[in-house]
Amino acid sequence: MRKSVRKWSLWKRVGSYFPARLVKTVDLDPTRNYLMCIHPHGICVHGLGICLATEAVGFSQTFPGMTNRGMTLSFFFKLPFMRELLLSLGMCSSSMKCLTYILTNRGYCKQKGQVIVLNFKDLSKVLNE
Image 1 (cartoon, helix red, strand yellow):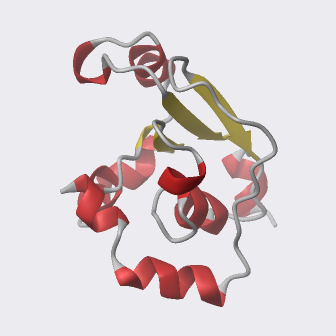
Image 2 (image 1 turned 180 degrees about the vertical axis):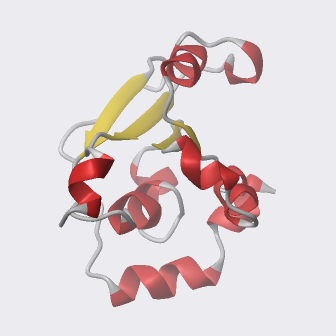
């Protein structure tokens, strides 16, 4: 189900509404794992969602052989319906346990070419803006 949800036409519409684009500056080796970090300007991370959690701007064509996963606060997985949407997009909790599990290729993540996108802005600062 993950791939079909990521390709919904809704995401392309959202991606065209917000001026989102994915810029590739280097080829990534699909036999290695990567950690990418973003610094958003708000609590809703549209750039992560549009560019890296969906196919709105063509992540799989830009980085063939790579599997991307966004990480977000555990809080969002406690909200009804939000949890199911995030899981269907391949998102996971931003905990050290989850990060280590995916990057060390354990369990269902035994494949190489994992790209983890971590949102590292402090929530207390976001809520005070």
